Length: 189
Ligand code: DGI
Ligand code: FE
Ligand code: FE
Ligand code: FE
Image 1 (tube, protein in one colour):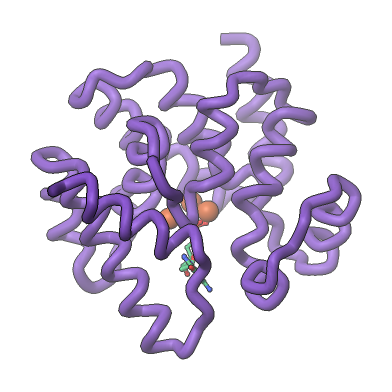
Image 2 (cartoon, protein in one colour):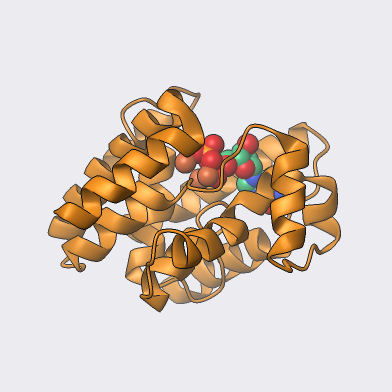
């Protein structure tokens, strides 16, 4: 509990009230899903709370930090710096919030794109970020109700929606987004 107070205090200072409140809603959603799908509740709580710990609004600050922590920027990350807060978040959670659990750190690292072979915790954090009660975009209701009946189906639908949106925006699609989708489809068969 003392640890959680430290985390909350630091997080609020670092990412601001709006993103902090989003993080609390993701945490609550993650805990609900962890109970439903028998995932470790403490891990879901910490990963949900910290998933956006590197979501710094200032681009230069974010890029400098990524450089300081030797994050290798692939082509897509270079052009879409918003994607950096996932991998950077995993490092900051480890070094500045003292999270040593690999499962938690990976769920943070891949929360924006997903990845091949997503763990149950990865899936819960990915979808909680997408459906938390503050989210309001076309299609979210359907994913929200599906998440509590068919977690994998909800992930696939969320990835499809995201890819459709990215295509619409003429944005680059990260390979992990594609790999996550291929994996979810193959896993179903
Ligand atoms: O940090 P949040 O806003 O809470 O949410 P997030 O980390 O899931 O980021 C969502 C954004 O990430 C959304 O605008 C779509 C974008 N995104 C997800 N996958 C990809 C992507 N952007 C690009 N360019 N490529 C991707 O594969
Ligand atoms: Fe995020
Ligand atoms: Fe997301
Ligand atoms: Fe988020």
